[in-house]
Image (tube, rainbow, N blue to C red; front, side, top):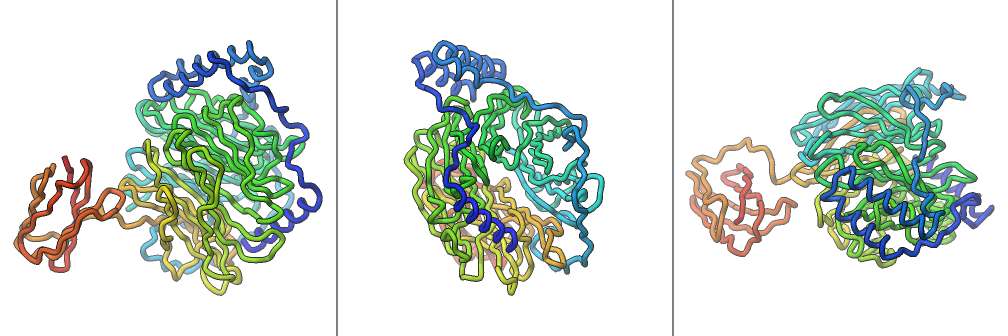
Length: 578
């Protein structure tokens, strides 16, 4: 990690000294994108069709937009086209067998395994990890292992599945590739209809492929999104019908530079048939990431390949190639250095959006440690800094970051994470969970056992379990400290815990509750607490009696959790408030 940070800083200083422009020499020339009333109506129709339309209707709307642009500006109409990436017969194959220039060695002692609260999912080397959770709460973790770099013939993606809220995992799919894997992002396309898990995978040879697994059988097929790709970020919309779901991507493609592009999959193709590639603001970029909000709202962030500036772009219409807004400069790279930015949007409409960019940050040209910095876009306004988050001392970096947002309209809770990297390795590297609550960050929470070493070479993946509590998948560290070793899962203990301590004679009624909820037992009730499903306490009493009544008239309708403590025992129960 330390070497990677130093190299990134040196490259940044070199490029700043060499050139300050991030404009792509071969980029797309800005076009007149003023919309006619007909086009405005068609774009509005696209938002209605997302939730109510069929795949055929969504695709017909796109073609109608293309035809309407033909009358206004044929150059814009020509942007609506397939990417046309080639097809191959092996995952990771680009027509030329991959041969590493140098065969690395990776033979070293295993680390001591003393994890207690963290669940060991897989033993062995881990070179990257990501995670997604379905609407029904199934957890999928993808971890990949680089073997080709070390003389092997194939790399592998291992996908693990949990159906019990992370209490246990089993190997669901093992997929070989014929080129070294450099990044994987998981997208679950679940809902009504055909369901798939897609491992979007970037390879050393520049391929970006959608490696897709059918949920019922885990059978695999794949398709190339684009070639000459150096980085990417992907997300999807979430209508209930999977045929209407589409994936959206922002990615760096090598043209005259590492130019930032966007594209989208075709409705009804379940993450395949990629169309409408467009250079976003004709920018040479680096460290690109992407997020989806609600009703077509798409957002990208990246740093300037030459300047180091932190940029962002917004698109209100499903990565529509004619709808990207002007590039916004958030940070001047000559003043501050930005590393590993991630972007996440609340599930709000474009006009009332809340989008955060969470990144590592330090003074440009310095050798200081990296602290965290958060920027917020609120209701379409320019991004402003909302937190300057210290790492906890000069010997600590806030390093690799990640994010996850529940696919529920109106959700403003954004889960983020980072690796707290100890610079001189005098202490162990740690995981931190950090929640954006709609206005700012809550207090950070430690995740892995504090007396064990988290790997600091790539992000730990964050998400939520079915009870809306944060969880994390991450790698431990090899004996030498050079590699990720062993895959772990940990989740925050939610109030919906497994009930393993019976309270004698306990009863509670009525459920659903109205104005009152009555609780009784054959032993003294020490404390009774009610929480929302997000863990917010709304009521608490200390009866010190065998009977108690909670006044629930003031509570909003919905589902709550009742926690009852008695004689050193504690149980939780689900309560419905009418």
